[in-house]
Amino acid sequence: MTDAQQPSPPPRLPISVLTGFLGSGKTTLLSRLIRDPGMARTAVVINEFGEVGLDHLLVAKADENTVLMDSGCICCTIRSDLADTLRDLYMKRLRGEVPEFDRVVIETTGLADPAPILHTLMTDPLVASRFRLDGVVTTVDAVHGSGQLDGHVESLKQAAVADRLVLTKTDIAEAGAVAALRARLRAVNPAATLVDARTDAALPVLLFDAGLYNPATKSLDVQRWLRAEAYEDNHHHHGHDHGHDHAACDHDHGHCEHGHGHEHGHHHAHDHAHDPNRHGDSIRSFCLARDEPVAWDDLIGFFETVTQLQGENLLRVKGLLNVKESDRPIVIHGVQHLFHPPVQLDAWPTDDRRTRIVFIVKDIERGTVEALFDACVARPGAA
Image 1 (spheres, rainbow, N blue to C red):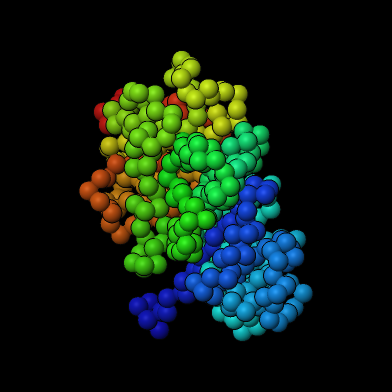
Image 2 (spheres, helix red, strand yellow):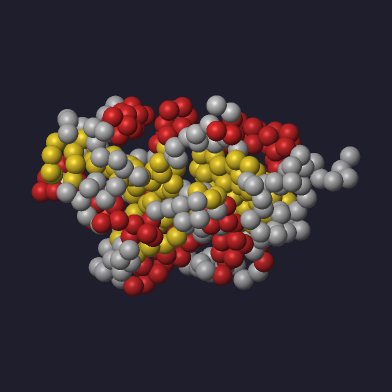
């Protein structure tokens, strides 16, 4: 058989990570999702069956770890290792021991840092060859969310790395508190889609297909996934606009910066009585941009340096790179010190050919990352 006749590998199955702080309605949302007809061909990985209240939906117990729901979902519990669970579930699918499923949803515990789960999806060879990260869905309690963001850094990290943010309990929260929480979430994570669990009916459509691969077009959709423009325009949408151009994307200096940081060298007493000691100040999201093509070795040097120095605090990194060695763009995606293998696109998605790298970080100022970038990436004509 020639190379042209080789069968293409089966498409990798999308995995969505459902996280959220204790009491934020994560389990209630999951129970609602598995009843939705759009979730029929879904495998759900949970910590305990009892926590999700699945008893009345149980059709047959396949084994001690897997149950089949009347909605068509397959639910299994996380054993000692997530990679083992996913490998086992996939092999059961191949052997026909469970119905075929088209996607996986993993529910984390309320205090979980999503990073270890994302690391498993990136580093385990069999898991990475059979599954792909679709996105992180985070529930946020509209009543207690602001206090949880202030008091628990886990809650803030869950919100910061999300591709979809789901507000829960908005029907019993004060309207002003909901608006303030929305503004704060926009500041922490301007690119995430905000969803109201109470009023948005088509939740599977809104929450899933958030990854680089767009099943509707059967292609890579980097514009939808990266959403770099959200970091450029975010100052129009949240309550931390300082009334000047610091929040906008500064193409002359190659950066844009958003978050709760106060690295401008002065304080903002008018900023909603904002306490600079709150956990919110430690999380920032910003975008570095470069108009000119960049040497691949310089970029590798930059990413190696920043991960060595600040790896634990790089919550998530996404980028579209214009490299000197190719006419085609390269997509990168990292979580802390680990990066997916780079993906080269067939063509630029738009006429905008700038390198754009989105950072969501903890306890790192934008200037620190930008200084490393400028030190590692030579500008044209530089000595």
